[in-house]
Every structure is written in structure tokens, then in C-alpha cells.
Amino acid sequence: MIYSLAYTLILSNLLWAPIVLVQAGNVTYGNPCNIAHNRLSPDTKQFTGDCTATTFCSSNGTCLHKGCRKDEYPFGYKLFSNEIPDRCHKGEFCPDEGDACQELLAVGSPCQLNRDDECAPPPNFSELAGPNNFNGSVCLNYQCMWANATLGDACVIENTPYIGYEAGSGTKFINVVSRGNCVVGLYCDAPTLKCLAQLAEGQTCTADKECESDNCTQAGVCGKPADDPRKLSTGIYVAVAVCIIGLMVGTLIGLYIVHRRHRFEEREKRAQYWREQEQFRQNIMQMREQARTSLLSLPWQDKQDQSRTMGDYPPSENSQTPMLHAASHPSGLRNEFSEGNPYDDSSLGNDSGEDSLVMKAAPRGVGGQRSKSGGAQGRRI
Image 1 (cartoon, rainbow, N blue to C red):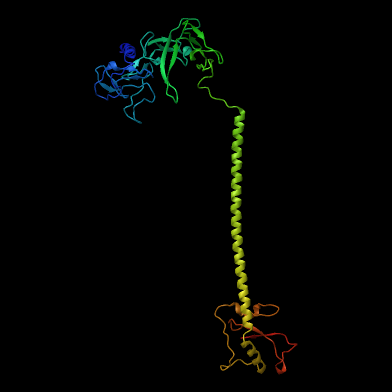
Image 2 (cartoon, rainbow, N blue to C red):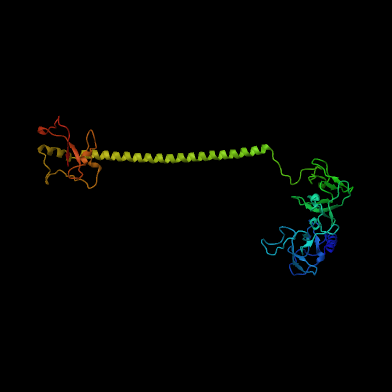
């Protein structure tokens, strides 16, 4: 089947590439298809046909589920789908159609485009294996061969054009990929069809295959490999390190300023609170002093002093002197006021256990005159 398939691909690529007779890739499982419509896309060289990506057109003209896959992640299947076919075992390959696994092809057998993995490797494949072949075997011009042509030997070349599109404008351009069967480190020269040594970086070139890096720049010299990692200078690392350290220091300084401002605001709030509390205390002390002054200036104070001159008798019920009884709860007015100590703790205790108000009364002499030599005595009410 692989022989007829190869010739079918060659013929269809020549005849059906410029035109499209049917809409490819829309026939689902179980529906009729035409195997003659199997071909390669003219721009990408991707295999296509009447059936969808998960089916193939069988020899009886019906789309069936694929029986193998060549890619690790095949196109067209849903994630974690149970319909994904298995990959082929060692010594086998899965063709582009994906119908079933087949044995590797011997040298000279027809193969599909760029399917080096369809060809059987040579006995010394470990010596011939390289990036431009598969285990030392290549498929050139739809035929399996080994990449064992040495320096100066005749070689086989294959030029495959691909259509590319420029970024932005979308203008089409042709990209030709040239391959040969020379050993690693050599390339097949198109004018002479001889294997020549590849060029080092910086030498003049006309194609990618001529360079060891497989990269011929637009300036016409061999450049670095396309997958070569870009190495940055030490100055860039230093600049990045300085920026990172500066950012960290700036962040710390910013946080310090913000926290200091927050602490200042909180300190001002506490200071304002204590100022208000001090003001309240001063107001209470002023009210207390005013109450003391008012009590000492009451009229019944003088009447009590006059009654003491007649004798130290308790006031009677008919007496006009007001009587003050102790409050059931302690009061600020119960304190004894004196010149030396405005608060006398001894006045707080008495035999009866009751709170009382003690006020100073100066002793009187004969004739109602105050005694000059007598000290102040307290009178308990």
C-alpha cells in the first residue's frame, strides 16, 4: 500500500495542488470519501483529504477512525479523549493517513515527504545520526536512503518550496528548504552535486544548509544557530541588580515614612486626649473650690458662732440653725478645711461610724471677742 500511496501523493501534489475540487477535511466517520483527493497542501505541505483530522479515507471509499498516530499530541482530538489511537512500536511507523502501523521501509523504498522516520536506519546509525536525518536515514524525493555520502562524493539533493507570509503586510514569499544525504558536517552543493564542508560562523553563504549553524543571515554570512541562547553582558546583570536593590530600599524608606506619619498622628490624638482630660480636671477643681467658698460664706455659719458664746449646747428643735446630716455615701464636702491641711483624715473616723461635716470655729473669749491665744478648734456637726 505504501508504494501506491507514494505515487498517489506525487501525482496528486502535481495535479491537485493549484486547484481544489472538494472541500477537504469535512467528511465525518462512516461517510463516503475519495482516496484520490489525498494530497499535500501547496503552502504547508501538510497531508489533507476528504475526511476529518480524526478519520482517514480507507480503500473502500469510507471515512474510518484512525488506527495510529505519529505525533505525541495529535490534532483534532478532545482533551482526555478515549478515541486517541496509540503510537507505533519500535521498528514501525504511522503513515500520514494514520490508518495503521507499518514496518520500517528499506533503502530505495518510496516514502512520504519529510518522513525520514519511515525509513529503516543503517547498521552504523549512531555515527550517521544528526539533526538533518532520523537515525542516519533520510527520505529524499520520496525515496528512502542513508545519509552516508562523504566529502567529495556524489550526493542527492531535494529542494522543497514552502509559502511564507510576511508579518504585518501578509505578503507571500517562497522559502526553499534544501536537503541532502551527506554525513554530518557536510552539505550537498546544488551546482556540483558534491558533498562540501559546512561553513563556520561569519563566512559568506547563500543558503542555510551551507552553515554549521544552519542559519544564513540576510547579510549573506553564517550567523549563530537559531536556538542559540542569548547571552547578556555583565553590565546588564549589574544594572538589574542595582534596580532591584534600589526598589527594595525605596520601598523600605516609603514604608518608614508612612509608619512615622501614622505614629505622629496617633501621638497627637493621645496628646489631645490628655489635654482634654487635664482641662476637665481643672474645671472640676474650680467647681470644687467654688463650692467650698460658697459653704464658708453661708449665713448660718455666723449664727452658729454666736450660739457657741452662750454655751456649747446642741441646737434645739426650735432653733433656727439648720442641721446637716451626713450623707449615706462619701462626699467631697465632708473634708475638714484648715490653713495647714485642707484634708484631715482624722475627721473621717468617729465613734458612731457616720460621716459628718467638720468645720473650723474660732474659740471666743469673754464678751464675744475671739481669743488671740487660742488655736483653731473644729466643731463637728
